[in-house]
Image 1 (cartoon, rainbow, N blue to C red):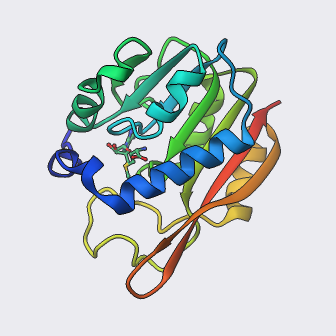
Image 2 (image 1 turned 90 degrees about the vertical axis):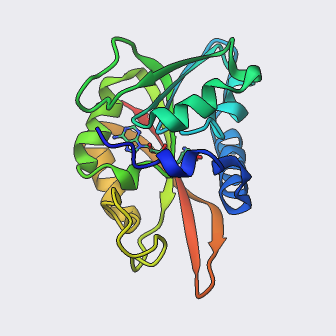
Length: 200
Ligand SMILES: C[S@@+](CC[C@H](N)C(=O)[O-])C[C@H]1O[C@@H](n2cnc3c(N)ncnc32)[C@H](O)[C@@H]1O
């Protein structure tokens, strides 16, 4: 599998736009989801661990899953995460984990997965009963967020009503959308949603 994030991994954490976005998404998750020290959490598309790092101190364990070895190598190099995080470099849609979680978080990874219905189904399969998802990504945009020709981008954001319908069809309830952050681009602003939902 080609590692589309190999070149970006090296200085991912040095980019202020990315770290501000991850910080805002993490804060929104902490505001809208009750975490406790019993919980096991899956961070889907964990990257270098910017979200994992905000959640790990507050829960029992975090599993960081990503398809980019380069991004996960950066995560693995962070000493503060060493004893709290298990790392899996695999596509969970093709190779599911033999584990279930109390919470699945994901930040800015869903637009990299072509089949959103199958992704939400995969999340449901990885959740305990009454488990929660907290998913952040771009609201529907005109395709200008990523430079033209960026590989591996399958969605120009998501329409909230469409995503709500997919979550409902895959057995989620108590679906709530929040605006976690607004990315200020050169020409326009890009709202970022956080959606929380409970597996029925
Ligand atoms: C924009 S980055 C976000 C990383 C991190 N969540 C953050 O907020 O800094 C998207 C991440 O999703 C990962 N990704 C893309 N497709 C994936 C898939 N099918 N399964 C797991 N991770 C995937 C990429 O490798 C990348 O690390």
